[in-house]
Length: 154
Image (tube, rainbow, N blue to C red; front, top):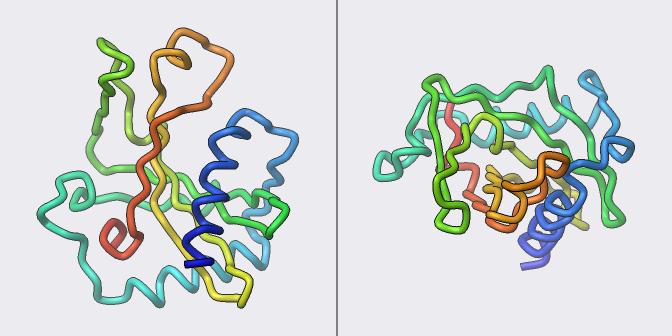
């Protein structure tokens, strides 16, 4: 339960710090990014996404070269953009008439809990009508968090 709470805390923090470029440090070759990459390949070996979920079953690539490390009070998290093979779009009832590319909104988030175990999730930030009207912010109020093992394969 604590690891789930930590991951939710990190995701919520990402929501509020989405535009704070000064708090993100890019370390594509850092030890934490390399450890996160090994963790993902080890935990997802031989697993396939759920076919019942259209978005989760779509081919995608984790863009490790664009990984960043986000620093939080309870530890660091690796944030890695996800690129879908086919262009996928999403919309929200809170922002009628607007559509967004999932590639622009979806990231893999990997962090360590207090016992040192990795946790991971695919996080999609969907802008609402307030953020849709403002071009200077990327904060969102609708967040989709998916279990990594049902979302990423290969």
